[in-house]
Image 1 (cartoon, rainbow, N blue to C red):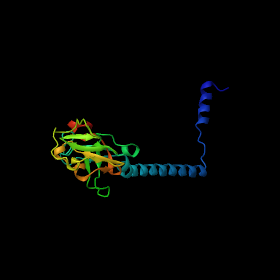
Image 2: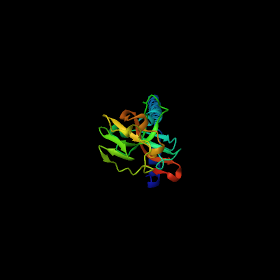
Image 3: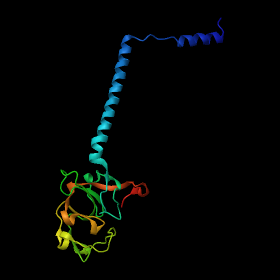
Image 4: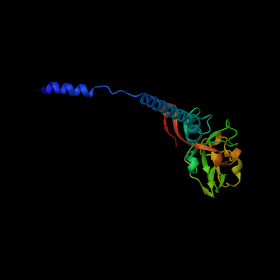
Length: 207
């Protein structure tokens, strides 16, 4: 008769006995491991591709303010995050701060950061330093100075076409904008400025 302790030892030894693995199993394991590594490598390639090409082109991008045309809202050398997806699914609103290519996207080095003032179909004019939209004075809380010295092409009423936007810098008297280069087509609006990441003391959302 075998006592309980001996029985347990025998049972443990039987369970711990190595089960021989066939050569086919080794081959299958190697294949599974190779497939796993290939899939992981493909995922890394897709992620890297998206980060390098897709995200900057269609989702978000960093841009840097060059000049003082948007003071006091933005300052020279401010680092901004631009939502490039916003205008792929929707339209700009009045007072959005946008990145744009006034001379077309083929001129990638000639971009501006401005604020949307006039919307498609509206008639816009500057008269006695007031911005008129369809004949009504626009409440303009972002302008740096109360007087606009140079109305440019807005000395006379201008009616915007379909998908055309009129943009201006908040520093109205120190900005080259649609008063000089004209309305900007939506296709040349690169995105909506939403966040400032530098300087750190001004870190946060941009209005």
